[in-house]
Structures are given as C-alpha cells and as structure tokens.
Image (cartoon, rainbow, N blue to C red; front, side):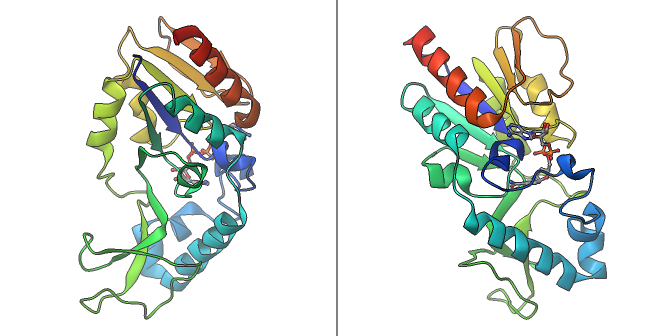
Length: 230
Ligand code: NAD
C-alpha cells in the first residue's frame, strides 16, 4: 500500500474564500507580515496582531471546505494519508481529514506568552488583550510567526521521508523551513505538484507538475491514484 504524504499551503483554501499570502503582492491582507506575524510586531503592537488574527478567524468561520479538501478525505479511504499543512485554518479537519499536522500553528488556538505548552482552544473569533492563561499571562495566537522556530518540523520531515507519493498543493514554496520538506522525498518517491502558478521545484526522477487549481486538480489526481493503485 502506497504511503501518501501531502504538503498543503494557502492555495488549497483560496477557493474557499481565504486569501493566500503571496497572491496579494507580498502583503498579507494589506499588512506587512512583520507587523502582524512576527515576535517584533507583537512586541510593538499586540492589539494590531490580535485584530489581524481576529479577522482571519472571522474569515475562516465564514469559509467552507472545498472540493480539494474533500478529495483528500476520499484519498484517505484508499491509502494511508498524512497531511502536513502550512495553513492555520481548520478546513482540512472540517472536511473530515484526520492526520493533519499544522506546522505553522492553528488559528483557533491561543497560547500563553509565559509558557508555550499552555495551549487553549478559541471558541468563536475573538482573542483580546486581557485574556490570560491559567498563570495570569497574556494569551497570544498559537501561530508560528516569521522568525520563530517550527517545533513540528522534525515530525514533518520524518513523515516526508517515508512518503511513497508526496503531493504538494497550493504553496509558493517560499517559506522555509516548510518549503524544504520536498527535499526529504527520496529518489523513488513520486512527487506531484498542483498549483495554477507552479512553484520552482528541483529536478526529480519522478516529478509531475500540474498547473491547475486545487478544486479541479486535486480531485482529478485523487481519482487517478485510486484507479492506478487499487
Ligand atoms: P503563499 O500565499 O505563499 O502561496 C500560495 C500559493 O497558492 C501560490 O503558489 C498560488 O499560486 C497558489 N494558489 C492560488 N490559488 C490557488 C488555487 N485555487 N488552487 C491551488 N493553488 C492556488 O502560501 P504558502 O506557500 O502557504 O505560504 C504562506 C504562509 O502564510 C504560510 O506559512 C501560511 O501559514 C500563511 N497563510 C495561511 C493561510 C491559511 O491558513 N489559509 C492563508 C494565507 C497565509
């Protein structure tokens, strides 16, 4: 049985109405990422950062999983599937996917600024100044910001190195270390990249590039894999 590992980025959620980051000209929803998604930004203006993620939560609550997310659930009925996502939204889970590793954190979680192990669910959209952990410290979004370490990177690399088929969907492969996960796929691994604006990918003996949107490209590839290997 082929072991399938998927790496998703903002592009898989684009057709659900959640804007990608790079498609808006390097700004994220009109903001310089350093102001809203970095430790410096948080130190300078925590209210702005909280407002930014509150808006992202409102957007995510309005969004529904699309045919791309759904096709990955179908795939998992036929193969062992692990999803490594750079997305902070919860659309993979809401579609029904089970093995989802959020390497850049989760929009609907907060964590203590004192102890990163103190993590709490966020019900609804709002996290406010004055919301504190059980030790009394301010809560921040449980997101891996630019310039911060990626604690789940080792787990993600381990998964990627065991893939028989590695599928990359909707990511510009510009954000490291996540973008380097493709390099953990061995020479025998089939690599499939699905993105309407294909990112630059190193030569590989078994590379398939599909310049298509997630809602059409992912269901098509899923059908093909099921037909080919079942
Ligand atoms: P990115 O914005 O850098 O790249 C988006 C990619 O998606 C591009 O290559 C683009 O061509 C592709 N794309 C656009 N529309 C698509 C579609 N319909 N189907 C398939 N692909 C499509 O995103 P990234 O590489 O994920 O990196 C951005 C960082 O910003 C990530 O770390 C992520 O945490 C964060 N982010 C997350 C979300 C989210 O959770 N949904 C949204 C924006 C940004």
